[in-house]
Image (cartoon, rainbow, N blue to C red; front, side, top):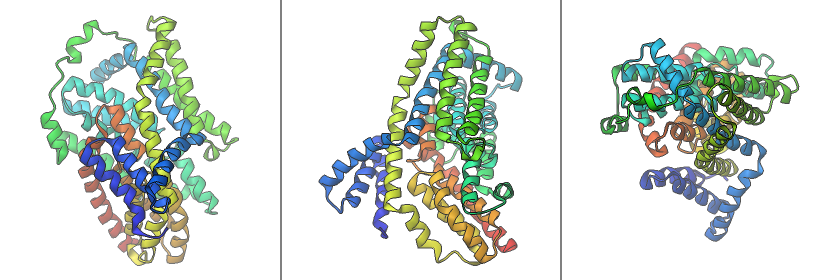
Amino acid sequence: MNSWVILLPTIITIIVCLWTKQIYIGMFAGIFCGCIILAGGNPLVGLDMSFNKLINVLASSWNVKIILFAVLIGGVIKLMQVSGAVTGLIRWLQKKANVTTPEKAQFLTWLIGVVLFFDQYTSEAVTATIGKTLANNYGYSKEKVAYIVDSTSSPMCALLPLNSWGAYIIGILATLEVSDSMSVLLKALPFNFYCIIALLLVPIMVFKKWNIGSMKTVEENCVASTEMAVDSTEEERVASPMLVLIPILAIIITVVASQYITGKGVFSDGDTSTSVFYSMLIGNAVAILLCIKSAGMKGKESVKLCLDGCLEMVPIAMLLVFAFCLSGICSELGVGTYISTLTAAHLSGKVIPVLVFIVASLMSFATGSSWGTFAIVIPIVVPMAAANGVPLYLLVAAMLSGAIMGDHCSMISDSTVLASVFSGCDNVSHFKTQLPYALISAAISAVLFMIVGLIMI
């Protein structure tokens, strides 16, 4: 379908979410709208199709494993929290990092997100868990935690691609017969302007106390918790930080090993969804054993806590089902292809890098998928680079920057959903508070891509 009408599901989702402040209603409205379009304008057929497509999300093993990952990580988090391991880790970090102010607590959250670059979902979950506790202790908003988490997880995965992100991009380049795909990706990293700026903007925002737009409002309305951790720890369990660090290490090792095993010795060919799913199974098992052995908890208590934590993640699983469904409908409508075709005629000369950045941003925003954007845009930029004498790594960098930027601005993105839920804030509020910072990073990135295009092409 080659018409602007196919953009309506994304537009309606955003409007309804902002109007009702209910992400489920907004997403279903977008799904229903998309299905009406697919049904040729028949609302009854569209309604039936909407429910069928929501159910069919679970027909994909990739989707199911990612959803189960989100559920299972709740067990690990619950065990870390109740055992006192998170409290122990935060006390240790506060002492080592000399955390005495809200600004230092926010910077510590940012630093944790930077270090945990190996997996986006794990990074978001662990960083948000620690960041949320620090926010309670030092009296700042959960929206700020979500912004910090979202601005470190995806950008770090894209900047240090020793993970499934790098393997995925290299794999796509390899299928397009780019012989030096690893070299192309590494050369692209210094030009990945959006990710670099988004990362650097966080500590600037923190120490300059630069709260703009909706972030200023939520910070002004944020009241410090009456149960400060420094005053209430006498009645809390306090366990060794190793109860956090060892499960995380087990998760990392399992992800890497599973990537190699499922890829039959080739990391880039590994099944990412299988890897993260099994990493969570191992992470839960390790966390349960450590709680029994080191935290003095009974086996039945540990298993019950783990199951309780998983049940608490069911709302996240539902959000992911809605997000995957809406993203799939956008793909079926051909939103990505429509946007790229619409602008392809204008991609010429020295403005190619900045236009690739804009196209990738719009595509990722409309579909809610940075990885889907990679799959659509990379096959476009490879021949484009060769035809116009543009360095391929520069266009790959523009594509990466745009995909992450659009992902940060999209309410239907799984990373945006998870960052808000793990941080304990409303998804719509996270979208509104993060948007000004994302747009600032995007504007600076666009200028830099224009300058680079003028100099290098």
